[in-house]
Length: 237
Ligand SMILES: O=C1C[C@@](O)(C(=O)O)C[C@@H](O)[C@@H]1O
Image (cartoon, rainbow, N blue to C red; front, side, top):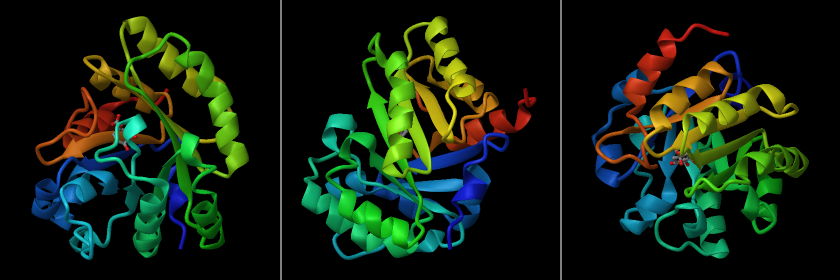
């Protein structure tokens, strides 16, 4: 059953709670996860790098909250260096548990086979993009990438970009009002990450990431609990 439409609503921004290590995942009960976020992100690349993914389902105790699975490539901040074949194998294993799957837009071609299977099984995917440096041309690249994500069949386009100035934060949030055709999840990284994430949520970013446990999964990321409390206080605009 697809739960994506309810999870990808700009007027109801959701908080994604991400685990930076296996200990944080193992120590978090379903009740605690529900308290901290609306969706849990399982970073398979991080778990694989810790060697705990081979045969287990270390997220099994979180059945009851939507699970978003990510097998991030090293070029976009992933741990280890998962090849295409390894990522396909990991994704095939988790499909029965997935409410959503994250695939880098740049990998959509390589993972075309598994994306077709997800389409048949009605499992929506998030096309993602990361810029850890905050390059000057990234803002201009986001609208065409969102269009590519639509063409590739993604349910959402996500971009995480390092912010250098308040002007960057305003530009990122502004894109949420100007790009149409697909739900967007936009967020800043670095020292301006927290303020950017609040502003982006207020402007309609559908998925807003924080960490659960003791290890952030991106520079400047707040805890999911704090982000959820902050977003709950925002007046809709
Ligand atoms: O893509 C994202 C967003 C993120 O990079 C962040 O900036 O919070 C954290 C990642 O775990 C997740 O897959």
